[in-house]
Amino acid sequence: MEPLSAASFIAAVLSPVFAGWVRYLFDWGQWVFAALLVVVGFLQVWLLRVTWDTIQRQTQLLRFSQQQWLDIGNWTIEGDSTPSDDSRLACTFELSNHTSLPVTLTRVTTDVLLMGSRTRPRSYEVTEFLMLPPHSPSSRYVVRVPVLMDDQQLKRFRKGELFVHFEGTIAFLGPDGSDVPQRFQQLTNLMPGKITLWRPHGAIPEEVPCKRPICPETDNDSDTELNQQTGQ
Image (cartoon, rainbow, N blue to C red; front, side, top):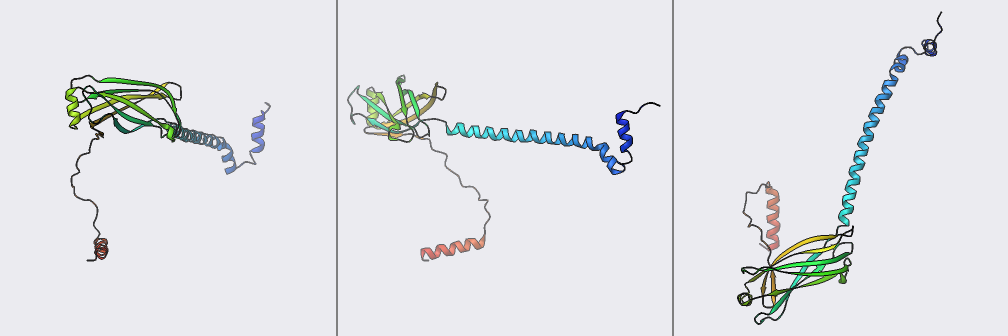
């Protein structure tokens, strides 16, 4: 008679005990447990994906909150209201820091082009290393750009028909210590003692059929209230 192995002996002993559905559960329990492990694994992958997306959104919000830029505004004109020939006017504009972090200004380059003339643009550059704190009176920096005119341009200036296009780059230090460029451009109309900023206008809206449903009761009540307010 061959000796029984340990597994066969245990099976022989427990066979009368684990009968019916208990034996069925004992036979298939390992497969059920393996299936549960697979389900848990998929849930872990899904939770990791959700966590990763949340981290990415928080990182984007943090980058946006730390983003730096300079606002350009308060354009003015300096010089005599009736300049003589070959005189030099100057246009000024302010750079202001409205972000939540200080901005270190390093360079401002401005190209000046007098529209309607054959003269080439003139370029001016200002090199600085100035920190502009956020939301304070000292966070403003004034840039002064000369405007040179010949005789024809001077006549157009006196008539209020001189258009000057300003275009340039503002550079400031980024988080990694390198210069971050910020482009700008502005078309202006210069006249004695005044500068007008040209802004494009949108298209004129056209009337289209209204798709909003009409409620007679509401309309009547509104008309009654309007008549009572106007005293009719």
